[in-house]
Length: 198
Image (cartoon, rainbow, N blue to C red; front, side, top):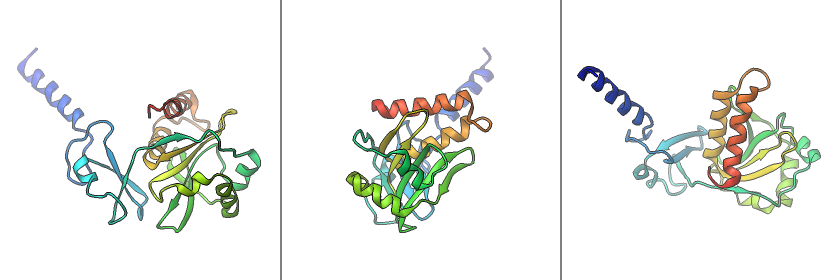
């Protein structure tokens, strides 16, 4: 192998390894890095540990996202209640938006996170029957609902999991129905959440 080719391969490997960078300071990021959320823009930012520690709570533009993924085994959300929420698909996440001053709902789509207006009376009723929903930390925690092919699962998750699911759908969805590859990726995502490996 020529010296030039070897140098090129080293450069490509370095570039690939340094692809993800802290969006505040530019430092390289490892897998499993921290995230910050900008509630006003509803945007997630990748952050190094040093930058993330600067935002422990709600004292600035960003909020630190603490990783969480918990299957809510006792939550019951029947089809009638789900239909009353007005979500047109079987994948959605709900969180309390401090900017909007209410609970908002989104579902993953090939175009990104799509907001869906929900019946707030229906949400209040569901929240009343599931007290853990009232404990969700605004902007950084969500209820993630998976209702596909007979599966009925509900998760309390950090918001970064929701946006990772949105990213998977954007990248892997094919055609109108998603295609086999798209649903395989979604299935793997929820299997990892279920098994605690997310």
